[in-house]
Image (tube, rainbow, N blue to C red; front, side, top):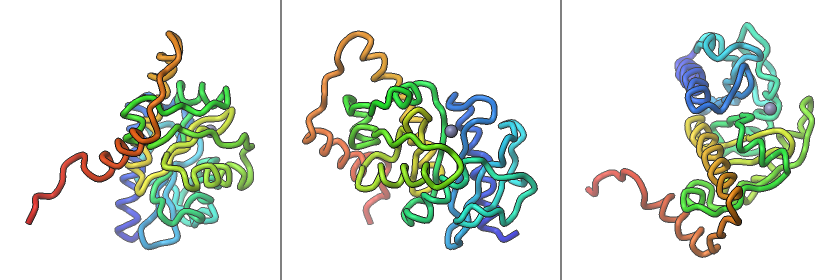
Length: 223
Ligand SMILES: [Zn+2]
């Protein structure tokens, strides 16, 4: 095995533990994948293997059509959706799928999570949109993800009656988006129980999102 694939195998195996740690998954549901930089390959979770049994060695390497290149097990049953996203979004380096509770409750109603918190404006820059209902087995989930997120600032989409897919420049960014998606879905749900959440203006959302992307966080020291 070549070295970049080994690093990605380890990263993808480790990031699955973040889904468990943040209580985004139960049993074997949910999956993380990453693109192998410079190669037309992705690394994804094996199908039906428990989270505490995931290792770098049992991750599955697939081509971008979802065919297995290296691996003992079948790849995740969501591999076709991940592969579709990588084929159509060269900017995407990581994809995550969960059925996290609060976000999936919004998906069950087919309702977007409105952008009513500064943290949402920061991370998502908009509402978290709803994608179409799609059955597993062909390209329709992948197509729904790509079409819904096309031109949208949100890295997360709620697939109707299903759950969450998130994208990122790498797998860690996609995991972060999945964690934040569940967090804001929960908070806005709770706000709803007591009244109508107050909207943020489009201007304020733009300003918050710009600052978060360009100013916030640790910057390298000036030369
Ligand atoms: Zn699913």
